[in-house]
Image (cartoon, rainbow, N blue to C red; front, side, top):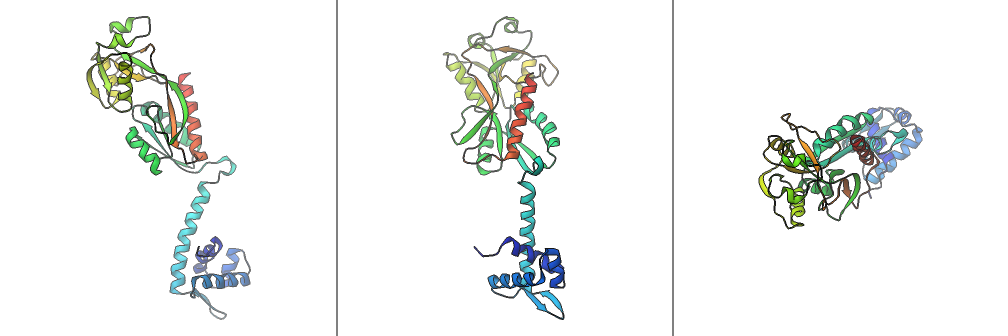
Length: 304
């Protein structure tokens, strides 16, 4: 440790703004003699003169003193930013909230969160990153993200999970498809010979294939596409069916305005959940937990 205290840095950050010790002492709210003693201590630690003090001519900074003062101002500004960010005085939350969201989930979660949460906490800086597990998990580990909303599929052991809502797989198909007319949950064997428009993004792809494999079935894959919105668009044109997780605000139309039919999938349909994940070794900040809690409320309202 250098021995410099924050008070020392505050003194050196202020000193160049004044011509006399008395003026500087007044701003710092200390006596002139106390300021003089503090300056002597700072110079002793620094090992050289930082300020020239003459009774008849006031004070002036040495070249080293001016350099010291410039660094001190930068440090004090950072301290001010820290103090503005992390204390939660009077219930106000301040600072950055960087969250991620799994790509296929994002249209159903991100717009609502970004519309409603930031206005409740105007001193927060909220930003979002959309991606796959391969993109979101490294960002969590590196500290680029505070939290990520994903499906509870193939998650590593080094994350903490908070449930946002429970879900399970369901079938989306054209309303005029014969299977859509059945008054019962669909089974995988009903679908095995039908063209599947598969959402191609692990772990979702792997999960779908495991469902069929668990019953000794192999799906007939008509197309593998990288966007769930494209799955719905192709299903809306009657090109096949899709498998997707039940969500609280699924639109019953494709992007092109074509109707879609959602049908339950009979067990074995492994229950799942949307979860908020964060690094296990890191305590989640209050401002980030506020985002997680509010997202739970939003999704619950969507179900209702």
